[in-house]
Amino acid sequence: MQGDALVLLPDALALSADALALLPDALALSADALVLSADALALQGIAKFNSLRI
Image (cartoon, rainbow, N blue to C red; front, side, top):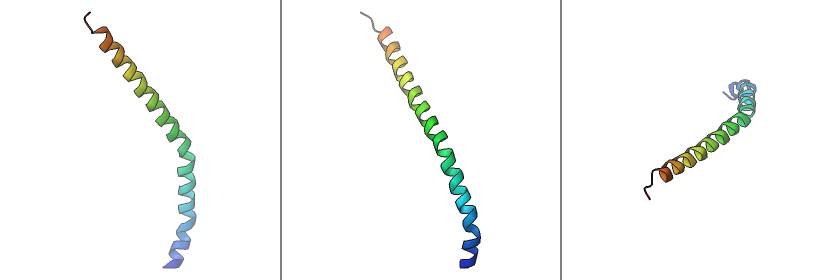
């Protein structure tokens, strides 16, 4: 059974390396999502301000 784990180890290491390689892309997408959320909040605030009756 332990021999099977040793055989699978290179595959696990390769998958870990792939996951690490994707991490910068995931972080960039998260940053983009935060920027879009901030923009949406700003637009919502502008719309709310424009809808006020003075």
